[in-house]
Image (tube, rainbow, N blue to C red; front, side, top):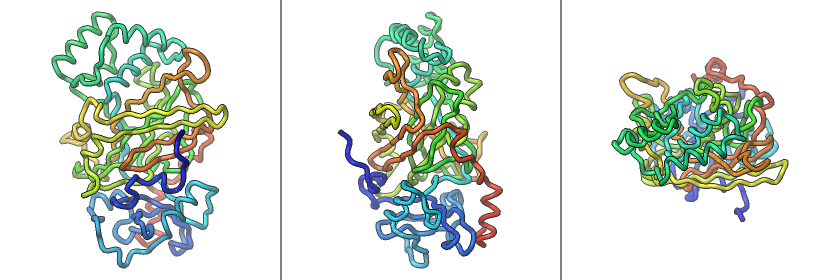
Length: 396
């Protein structure tokens, strides 16, 4: 039996001990005439507007403007955490602030096939040509060839090369195994700057898909200089049938309206939270069906990842790839749910109204209800709109 959910369920277990940065949409009454977003600091006493320090989260992180224990004198309190979170999760009152995605101008990148176990599910998707009905038979064949546990396999190692030779000899080699156990990680663009949704917002699934799933992940916050300064949670919503037909359809499988969820907050690295906490984190997932009472509960440990998270950062940011506004990096997932929902051998897929909750001890909980991407609010507030908004508010 899961514990009841309340406003404090979305905070880390140590609540306000860490440095929690977010973004909030502020009503016109709070901005002096034009409603718009501001970076915020979430504390036990209040949520503070950080726009006097930097108007965007990207600039805030790049400039190192927020330090643990900083003097909050002169910063405007917007209300309590409870006040804003209640409005974020409930019937939203436009006269009150709401939390939104903590990322703004940063590129949103993602690494795929970073867990050897989930790599096998990607191979199965490809060999089943995106057909959920064929997946069970393909799964038995692949597991029969691989045999034992490959969770400790190091990409690019002699052992990985031996597995490659075996899979090729059985006609089972896949492009997913190339990025799963080869020297180069898969790094792709998950979503556009300003397009991610935050806690309490509807998350989208392209309605052309009949086989899809959530991908709960830890997401690193990286500066323009390539420094990893914190982390948050993310849902890398995936269309398994679309990606399974062809890797060239990755954009259609991954980048759809409202299909990238981030939050609730970015927790900065400090004395209470470090990259080692990321490496040792346990990520939990629950899916509650609104229409059929279905419930999925699962968990995975980041210490089972095949590539260290900072290696993923180095493969994303280097002499050949720069991100002047910084980037958010999805680090991959162990999850590829296979539990049947609608019939034997059909596996898991979403239904409209599913409530997805992703959580870790140190990062809190991200919650979104699922809908079709064409029924979610369209993305209309991009970089141009942000620049106009900040200029009108006199904080650009």
